[in-house]
Length: 289
Image 1 (spheres, rainbow, N blue to C red):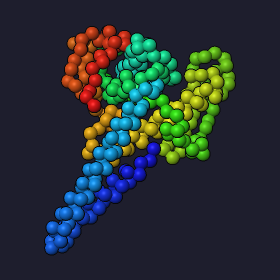
Image 2 (cartoon, rainbow, N blue to C red; image 1 turned 90 degrees about the horizontal axis):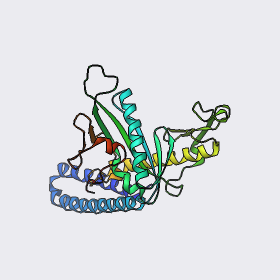
Image 3 (cartoon, rainbow, N blue to C red; image 1 turned 90 degrees about the vertical axis):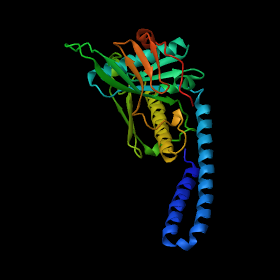
Image 4 (cartoon, rainbow, N blue to C red; image 1 turned 180 degrees about the vertical axis):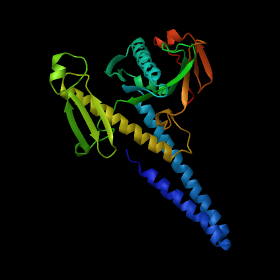
């Protein structure tokens, strides 16, 4: 995942800053300094174009992968959690409508398998805002809540290598459903990636080995997401691609129940029929790349 070109880019930026200082220190060298600055800026632009092209090529290579889709309630307390659950159902139905295989790995995590899954769902990544009257609201007021959706390609060790020595493993008993075996045997798995501090827990399967494999998939995908976000920050002057979205704080969609309207803020377009959309009939118009 390391790209030597990012190191080169940082070195060029440092040289550019140092060269600019020379103008103030010795005005007699101004003309030479400007020539050198122009050359350095040209090298920087060329390098940025190469990095951007590689990012686009990498995105295309992931388009045919299976995905790990995670939804987390954000602002809004219990209503945000309920909203996250509804989005999980929506994506389950959407995957099934497109004849993908959908597995629920955890209450908040789906694995959607099939050729082209990442290409289909990658534009759903971001903050989804809902405006509606919660069932617990006694005065009929409209509340606003949000949930974050993360879309990650399923990765192999060759994509993101994890050193086994960097992993702390713990097995424990699951407290969820699944019968006596689940509750009496330590089948649930918790993995901690020591260098990053990331912790992943999986308990959906009855087999400890299966849960460990699922946890490794999730951990690998999350490490990839961190690396992509880091790259995006380092080349923030470039056109951002969805796969390197970096910032998930901005809302991408609003689901307005009183007006029965879904709005995609990236393309400034709205659709009616929220019940159908939440049943998996997600509009297929996408932001321009």
